[in-house]
Length: 367
Image 1 (spheres, helix red, strand yellow):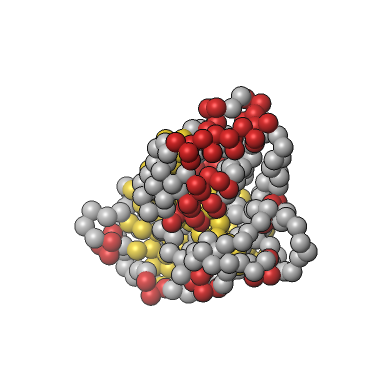
Image 2 (image 1 turned 90 degrees about the vertical axis):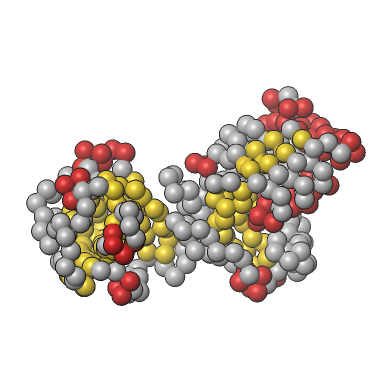
């Protein structure tokens, strides 16, 4: 996965007209700005970013970019200190946003096409792996590599960034407004500024990260499944689940069945790792492992084998996949809370075809 690499043609009629509209909005102090509505369809297609002068619109409260052709938003949007509502809806080429968006003090509402975003829990587009900083010659950066044609100011402290050699890039997913969690690109001047970033909400990769995950964790997704007949399923996307099961986790060559203590709703956290994750068994009532063959390279986690066509899938290297299932009882979660099950997946290559292993056992009801 790479950034969109298009450079903005600053001689295009659409860009020139957009720059005029920004200047007009700055001069008249308007509170709502929908610049694309002042462009023709052809002119809109010529615009892949916004001019840096967008930061001069300090009185705009609502910025509307509905149906744009934009591939990136400039960090200068952080200058729009009065912005309360941001609407880039149906801008399907916007897969990420600058961290400066999270620093706007009044931003409370946004309407974003979240299925187009990197790291979205439903579509799970992978984050581009960020380039390692190195000294480069003068001139604009390659936006396909860096996500920008130039970086001069730190996203976190507003201090100077001393060229690419002094650039510390990272991804972090944050709730900038409303319910949307957005993937944000941070261009920091130091590792200290990265350490000062807020923590992402549950269900998203811990940050900051560089697109390879954190501590081997590549992906984490929260699912709500219905454990019909006290069972859930983990399987190769092309396999048929085995209905025979025992000991709360029944392996077949390409599928396994997880027994639950309830036949109702279960909160399931699925995490994908590059290798075996560290043990944290003390936090759970029961921990069991097994190995599944996944020749397709896609693992499905679901509550009904008939629902395989629409089940959530997780990408791993084709071959053997180790599955660690950790259970928390409903009682531990509190009255009325669902049972919680965490499923961790990681590739084990051509070896490691170990069978079922009960790591931790505690008497449970219903299995």
